[in-house]
Length: 401
Picture 1 (tube, rainbow, N blue to C red):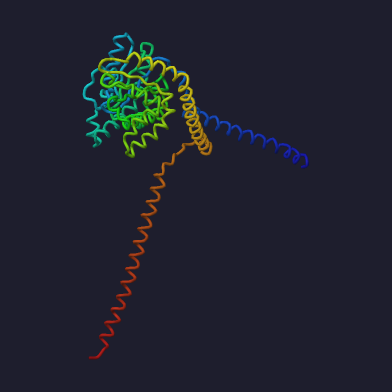
Picture 2: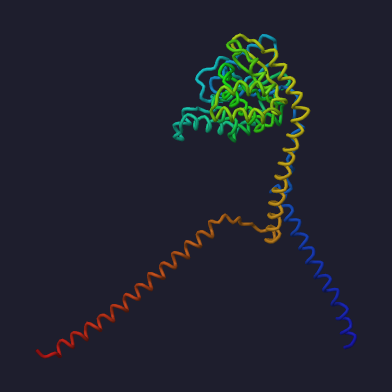
């Protein structure tokens, strides 16, 4: 007996070890199946690559923006003619969906993709809302535009981009930011702000244009060229003097004693530093004067982009990728924990509809219970009333007249 007990006691640990090993094998098998399922779901997806690997030094993107009536489209036509005349390899992109006719041929035209009037009719919008919605729709497929330009990058020197006359629609909209960032992340990008020179002879109007140029510079974070158009009508020397010496500008603005004039004089002191780092050129879209100087300013701005702006852009892109990577990793870790908890079974994503349905069912059940209780109360009340009515009838019968 003692020998049998000893042998049983000796075999007990062996049985426990075999049980533990089998459980460990089952657990390892479950882990392997779980990892296989996660690989099928691409849980360990590759992180987004660095956009700098696809960056090209050519072509240079020239985004032309300006107030309505400043001669923006006419200037772009002159630039296209200049590229043809000088054998410069250019490419034209039109982003104005509301323009009826263009004086130049566009290689990529938003009107070929989005019908402006149909957008207005379908979404019941006005002119500005139609332009904004058309740009939003076009921006959703703008990666294809970048791909088309990338395929032709070795054959191009410049890409000329025309924008809507309603400047705020492009500069301050989400679609404008998407388009600008898409260009700037792939090619050297320069923004040129077209100023109507004859209208800017008034100090208040001049200051309004400078404030707009300042806002565009800080919104896009790209090199900005101030292009004074229509110099064949009015020379832009006065504007250069106002930008170089704020005392000359204040002397010109002091003739007006209004509140706007005093505000303009104060703002001239604020923008003095802004003028120092700004390139300006005078051109005529009609006669072609100053176009060579304009392209020289573009080349200088492209070099400035490579030296200063690209580093800041890469830094912002890396920060954005880091945040996206952290969010993706957090979501993947959560999904991994859920799958480990479920043992590799099907994970049902909670969309909130089930809880909403259960809540509505419970509310309906409560309402039905309340209705039943009310019906019961009505029945009890009816029996009591019948008894009271019978007693009253008996009293009336027993009463002697």
